[in-house]
Length: 82
Image 1 (cartoon, rainbow, N blue to C red):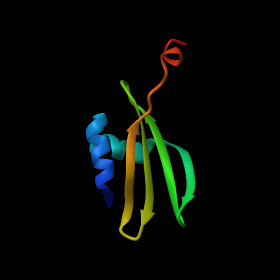
Image 2 (tube, rainbow, N blue to C red):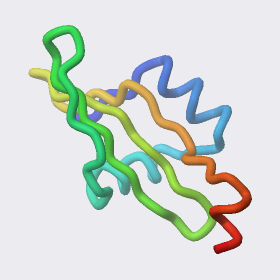
Image 3 (tube, helix red, strand yellow):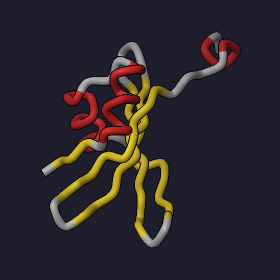
């Protein structure tokens, strides 16, 4: 089961990220972050879509996967023009 936190839902709404994109990122994204935060291991996966790149920060709990937050990766203009 995947639980999406209130914070993540607000961030998703602000950045135009759908639940389907979250699920795709969790399934197919590249692991970019693995960090221990307050005795809880957190992971960050990144996935590039046609028109955007998203990062999903999540953890594992007894109930399943919990999405902590999600956001767009914003690239600087000079990186886009390479």
